[in-house]
Length: 379
Image (tube, rainbow, N blue to C red; front, side, top):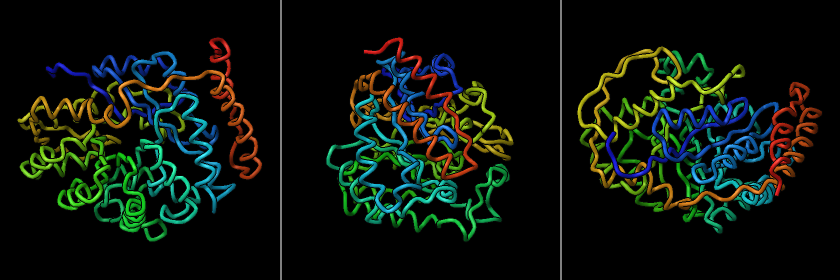
């Protein structure tokens, strides 16, 4: 891909046991200049935010971090999570985080964690604070709509346990909750991951863009997004041209490690495939046959990727400018002593959660590893 601008991937997952050098190798292999690490909660270790801050400390000019929310609050202060999240966000921003990643809208997470509906009063202090300070948020809301249909859900997704029956919150119910939040707080700076799962509903997404001028979407696969957008190439092209300031490049590299308990590291082949699919769609105008992998990324069927061949000026916005315009051209500085303090708090919360839920086996290894690292460089 020939260009004269930086490539910034706004959506890469990271947590130990992935090694920082593995991430840097993947960035080199995919010709990624800068990365935003998005963090999701860990069942046994509670938080992987400090893990990512080590990576940022090692490469402070090229790494942003969007930390997860404090999952313990759903169990300990369910009816008042918002005010506790405000305190938490202040702490992790001080540590060196640049924004927040919310996985809370993924239906599978809502089956496992007692997350209050997003438009309830329990959340209100958080939304108000996020709007007030202009907090950048990447928010995963819903999944592909076929995951609620037993006849349409792909086999690979069903095998992941992502079929959502009547016991799981409905996707339209979640959309309604989110739009209630936006009506009350129209200045929230939110990037909806995976195109807000509206790749088959471009007029609907366009209407939301018109109504809520501060929301954005990223291009992180779900492969269904590229199947849908390729089927309607002309409409997709017109959408991207009109809303070129609202779309961000992301790949979901490292996502497999978020769902796999036996993760040993980032899969380099899958990572390069992810980057290639997203970039080819943005930059090329011809048709490319994407071969099925029978797995997490592409699924069981080949499909024709019909690239949009966007202009260089639009590419520059999607690959770089739209993110830094929202978040800032320079990542925040990591403060080692504050990260150490947060690690100690995390260890305490691991102990508390293991007493609340006997299925949680306390794992202090990551927190201790991060403490050891930052003690060497403490300032």
